[in-house]
Length: 290
Image (cartoon, rainbow, N blue to C red; front, side):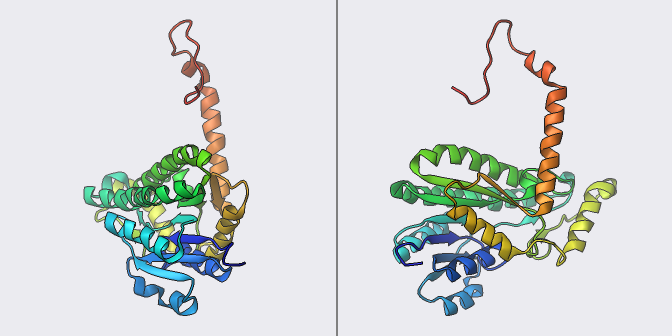
């Protein structure tokens, strides 16, 4: 790949997990990267290996000044931003009643508002370029909710709603949006990036409690390979017709199929009651159609 064809990637949460795998993969193929982390010294190996094509910067996605600094670093270093990867985030687990107000708000600040900050900061550049691709790291839990993950699910459902609307808004401007929905991958999500509730309630032991036990027991045993996930994301970016949603892992694909079948069965069962709610004689079209 020549420099003229090399893309510029801005990747949040580059020090571990998907962010680390993706940063290494795109640098290896000759692209350029602005790699961000809350502790950028953790990215020193990338700098040593790719001194000409990687820039590192401290970034807390909840800090607007640092967000704008990261975008400006990319523009100053490489002149453009072709791909934004919103990877920074973590998981708060526990029953909805068990989690503190403070923990809930922190979770939404990072997973939702942090990603939103990044999108809003990079969009002026992408609009001017009339090109770009935004990858938002959601989860299978952004499409399917699980007991014990309601707050985390809420952040990812919100991210998916924002992403789906944004995709429609920017499509005429040459900008693509892809929502990435991984299942269980061998990252540190089940370990360092996991926040557990300060209290547990016995009534939720059979539901949320079992889910938490399963998540912790799986740490280090997840079937998904982050490097292969990175390759799939690159393939989506390189595609002429990238997907709006990219499920990763057989477990994610299976869970999403089950959800879709369940939603359709319930919709069909209640369809007559649903459609009989309009005023008599009023023609009703699909929501969002004009």
